[in-house]
Length: 183
Image 1 (cartoon, rainbow, N blue to C red):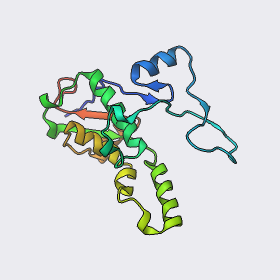
Image 2 (cartoon, rainbow, N blue to C red):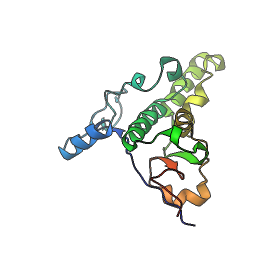
Image 3 (cartoon, one colour):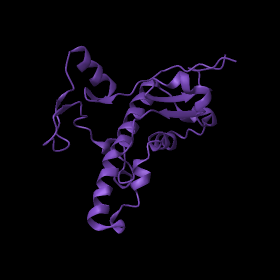
Image 4 (cartoon, helix red, strand yellow):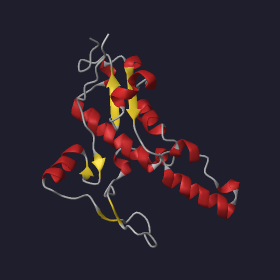
């Protein structure tokens, strides 16, 4: 049996813009997302430029009380997933959610959270570390939060799917939707 994955929606949240349309428009216009880094002090660094996501407002996608449980990478992943799901027209309530899985590829996860909490440990001791350290920094929680939001319950089987998904930074996979049928 051959299984296929069809990409029916794309969600971009990147240095070129917030949202797929804005990012694509800027790409076609030749706009560069690379600029002087503003999210941290670059004093002492040889390189002071980077591709930062600017103007990102997580409150458009996440409630305030949930925000403290998520590193920025999770917030960006949720926004990207929202753009992709809206573009695709996928309706979770019309799918067998036991056959829907989420795959997110990320390099390290919440390094900003880890760095912040390490500083608290050094300056104030272990009692100062947030209880949300691990839930907000573990890399697989980007896909976990997306799964929770959309009700996806299938597990991604890395050994079987690894080769086909290696280059996909974010994918919501449905084996039962009209877009991706078993053949």
